[in-house]
Length: 453
Image (tube, rainbow, N blue to C red; front, side, top):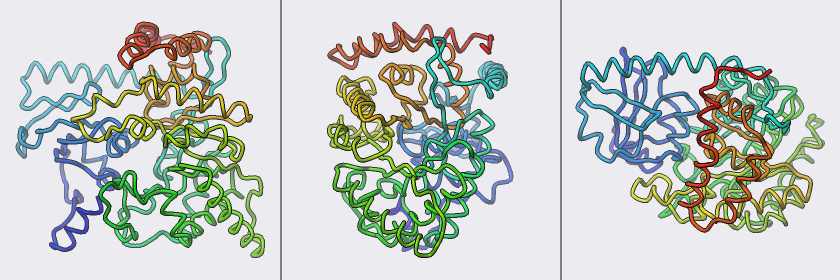
């Protein structure tokens, strides 16, 4: 993202701009940076297809959040599609049909009508609680990248915001957001979701997410380099500005604070020291804030997962960042389609890490949420539920489907499945077992028309 921007500026070449569009299109590209995806015009861009990327790449995640159909990791789609070509993009099945026949067009139009009817039926669930058939209450929240997504989330029945990705406030601009600008955004969200809570994650810039003028140097491996909390602990002035805005917003609603990319206790303690300094400054200025604001950490680095018992003693909650946790634990690049087969959410390592994280948290009476893509997948979500995860935060567009699955499942059965999965030795064994035990039930739940009141 940042490299491309620097090159475009040096060569005086324009970046991706679609403001001139006067017709609906499907965008085909080698890749889209998260900042490009975030700026797409939904009224004109019906979907996009790219050569590279994976289901858990940030552009794909952003597309789901914005409800823009996308198919990524197609390797040569830019070679196969010419400008002006007629194509069908099936985001559900990950398929692109170039120059479809009249029969294919008619079939997909019928499927599109059926899909829209299915989505309308899900709306009956909006105001019903996410509770299993045997009475297990689950908190179901939404992941968002900006205040404009809150109304969509609440309209789909979100019980608050489980992850606010604040880095998107820093992107697609030439300067850093001021304290007042950040306060306005955080306050708007806190007030809208009240009395429910919003979990505000401090900036997770770096990796493939950059702000044009942010002082991030070129790095050989940016995903494991100077990013997120590491960047904030060095650029303390920028970190303090954000913490001030978050604390001030906590006066207007139930705000929780979360640090990303934590790898050890030293980072938590240093971040909390800076937080204490900011609290002291606000007290001196007589600016009100929630003195008891909850502070949690993203568990997405294996080292943090392994010392979950220690971390649980010093924070108020955990949030499982399963996308990065899988990537770092299995040494697999999640946006490289060449090694996509190695990205296995049901790898025994991942299941055992999550099991340990949840048990360590519950021993210290703190709650555990899941905000990665596993939470948005019905099969993986039920396994996380069986492992004891308390809260799920998903894309606003996934809320109703996940709620339907929760309401049609039994917690005791998911616990049995999770317990058996922990005994298996390979990813393939785990996947086959999970599908055999849960997939048919999930299909039956999603096809059912009944709404249990």
